Length: 342
Image 1 (cartoon, rainbow, N blue to C red):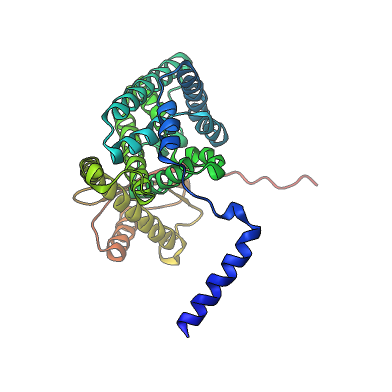
Image 2 (cartoon, rainbow, N blue to C red):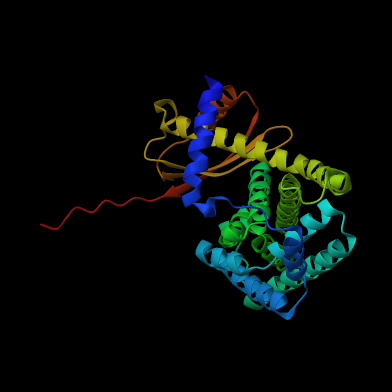
């Protein structure tokens, strides 16, 4: 039964495929892909010009907190070319191409950070926008995105028919915005922003190279014996990066859980303060306890005492089964009610 079904499907596909020759898509010959990646690893004027423009657009988008502007910067950034060349050189153990692509990548990275730092210093904005913060707190989710994008990029590079997918890969992996965030962090003299964005860039870079190399190997470019050194190095780097990324993901999960319990507590009748508005300002997991900061906006005459807040803290600790450091700022407001004129 299985044999007859398989035979029928094979016959049907073979017959119908005559009218769909474009479905018989094969990887580029080794010589064609080699030529293409050597060309994309050239440290040319066009490469640096596009990268500088991408850095300018990305930095301005981050400072303006504009996601659309940042996406535009990702599309024109040419960094994916030398990175794919590094992945290709790794699986073939081509040291000349590896050296050339690495020089192109490193000089481009340095230029992008310097341009971003100069623009941020020139404009002088000191506020840290949400788009900047989102690139300073990477997690294992970002590594998953980078590896998927690297696989897609390597597959698209090896096939002419889907080369149009490369701009989408550039958007997905977001190489230039983390570099611009590093420059902004250095300009603001904020080491946590610069270090977090550096971790994100290294995560994206290593994830792309590793998954891109695996996809190229699966398409029979190079062999495992040649690629094992580079793959082992990539796995080692990913393992080291995975520690802070896993901690960051755990912090995100804890924050989400705490926020959920806070919303439950705020909605609960037991912890409803009369005419008060409760705002969750921050939730930060610490080694000893979870730090929670709240702002409670309340009328001047309303009485919120320490005993009520202690009960609120005990409720959170019981629900989360973790100690809570609670900091509450009471903001008194004066409310006037004016009736309509007759």
